[in-house]
Length: 248
Ligand code: PGA
Image (cartoon, rainbow, N blue to C red; front, side, top):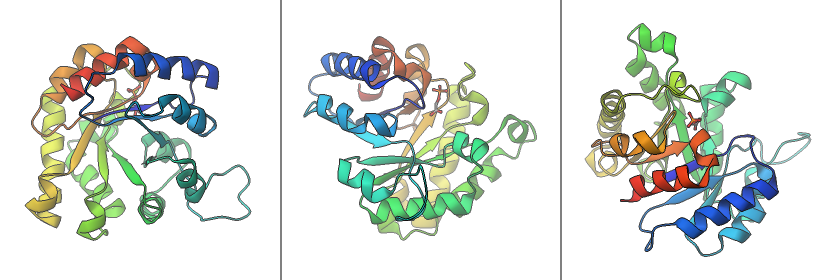
């Protein structure tokens, strides 16, 4: 799976040029999931251009209440009606810049699943936590707080994205060994909680400075099932190379 997180980049016009480029360069047949998560304002036009190419569309966020006096917010039912299939939740930028807590992330996960959409649940530690050697415990607590309350049937719909904060937008990528170590840890935590029937099939993406040059090595790791890509998803050729690495 290759998922693009455009963050707050590209106008609609620029975004549609990019989607057309990606659509034209997709592997054929496309036998893995390709997701684009543009800003809210781009969802419908991106979906229109994506058509039946196989490109799926997701949102980068949703609000944690169903409706009401929440000026400027977008609800999950609005996103579902638009045709979004995925929602990124728990991204470190939302946790850090917007103060989203594990409890809030859990509420959003529940809402996304209840609406029939698929959460892309982000987790990952800061450099400080990694340096102190507490990174696995930290990620485990994010999983416990945000996801492990779910019954197995719902949990199995969730996609996890391990995104070490020190690797996001920094140009510093986790080494394939570091990524594999954490992904194996996450899978083991899932197995311990839900059993092999769920854990063996859970999709765990890596995110953090993925580029065309490092994608293949990262994705070839046993427990890395693809990537959530920020900066490198904003350029057609680079993202197409990442798609090729994820889907190959
Ligand atoms: P990056 O962002 O690829 O620019 O590091 C990844 C993400 O934040 O999802």
